Image 1 (cartoon, rainbow, N blue to C red):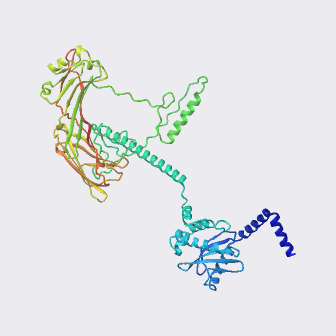
Image 2: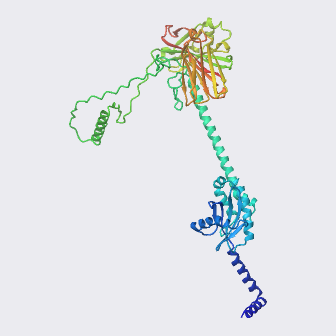
Image 3: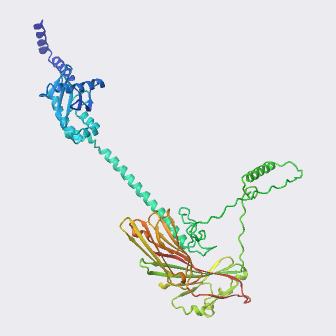
Length: 564
């Protein structure tokens, strides 16, 4: 029978060579499929597994049993790099610090390929873990598992991999990912720049509004919704009902709050007897609604709202009528640019005499000024309104319209203007001296000096930017100050600056390193004394020459007063 089988195989080889090679390849694939690596592990000499990766389905008990049996088998065959049992083969390589790199394979596996796989893994382990220490192995356990997967595929077959290809695959470098990350980073940077730009615009707008309110007489707390941290500060306007620090007492500067008085409940009205009348649509509903609202207001101790046509609108109080037929306003604005050394770079004064006729009697007014005094001011420039009779003004110092016409009623008219450009017009100088201490803080000394002792400045505010929201640490100060952390500003305040109070200084420390952050310094004040010695000597009627009662005001304030 054997000869017959061999003869049959030979006949098949000769008669059907293609069928013969197909059957031979199938047998080789079948034999190769069982040559697999069951597990790759790193364990200690005592059999403690540090990292173990299985490439075929194996339960935990079997894996632990195979690894626990390895140290006992090594003890009986120390001269070999592999040891076999009835079911598996252990291919191992000793590592440093009493550790082993171990492959558990089937007995039918190609031991030459397994040794090549073992040598490759022996190079991969220190390259991935960084060292052959037990702590390093534990810290890079998942990285080692990923590296084992690059060497051996699922099922335990060896991949055609090198150490450099394994490094590349572990890095998982992706060009698409780099492009996506670059686009994302560019968008984030653009959004951050746009956010910083908008935040700077908002802050600059708030600062500009704050400075404008300061120098225009509205106060630091007027109309400044977002920057309302310095309510109560005046901004260079005339004092109304006291200085800006009237809310502070003289014993410690604590704010005094007015005691809140609850409104008295409305007294109940006696019942009204209504006359009988016919049926009215909607009347009962409105009365019922009003009575319900009145009852709710009385229960909550509230004032009843004045209503008009049932809408509840409070009627606005009519504006007070002018008390005199004529109103005159002498107003001067000064624009000053100082340098950081305390000097004056430029100064310009502009003044206006504004006439407002409140009645027909005031419209016929003729204003007399001290022209003889004004003629002696060679450095001052005076200019009348084009409709004012200039010849009469030059000869007699009278301001009236040409052709005997009257002034418009209830509308202000600037009938005379003057200007002056001398540096001596600046009434006050500021010297701000910040010094970087080198310890993350800046020491700032600020001084002011009244250079025009003939003036009395009221409600003087010196506004300093701080460059930070941190509060300043005050070391010494004349006058009072207030800090607005939201705006990063500080206001140094004096109720009155005159010849008796002509100088002042302040010293404080604050966190930072930029000495330019304390500029520009803004100054605001008001005064009832003008720089120009102009005066209204008389106001008479053009019709009969009688005196016209009038209301005359004088005001001197800065248009822009800063040290950039």
